[in-house]
Structures are given as structure tokens and as C-alpha cells.
Length: 88
Image (cartoon, rainbow, N blue to C red; front, side, top):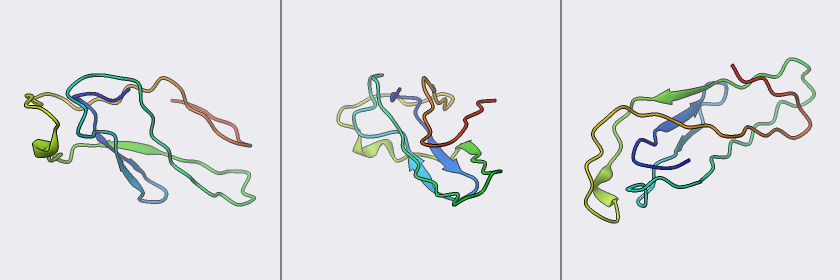
């Protein structure tokens, strides 16, 4: 989901960062975040993600809204192509 509490998420293996928050996050709605990771032929491939506490520039929000609070990331589904997934 995307909403007022949406954070910036980082893949620790690649350093790729994605902001889940966007200018329409003054209301909660379904959304998605994509990370494209190429592990080659590794049998021990692993991807770890961290929710960052970086400050987001809310000035671009499409309407006035108070974004005070804790950042959370609501994960509904995790998909992988040709791999095994373990959610901890």
C-alpha cells in the first residue's frame, strides 16, 4: 500500500533506493514497489531490504496534509521470478 506513512526502502545488496511515498500519498491506496535484481546463476542469492528513516520532502504533496508519525511499509505480496522467496 502507499499512503501518508510510506517510507524510502533500500535493497542492502545493491544500494538501490525507492521512495514508496509520492505526491498523492495524502490517502492510503494500493500500490507497488519494484526492485530488479540480477543474481546470475547463484544458488545462494539473497535480497535484504531496509526501511529508511530519511526525511521525505512533503512539499510536493497534491494537497495540504500533516505527515507526522512513524514510517511503516505495509507489504501485502512478494513476488519473484525463477527463485525461492522467504519473508522473515
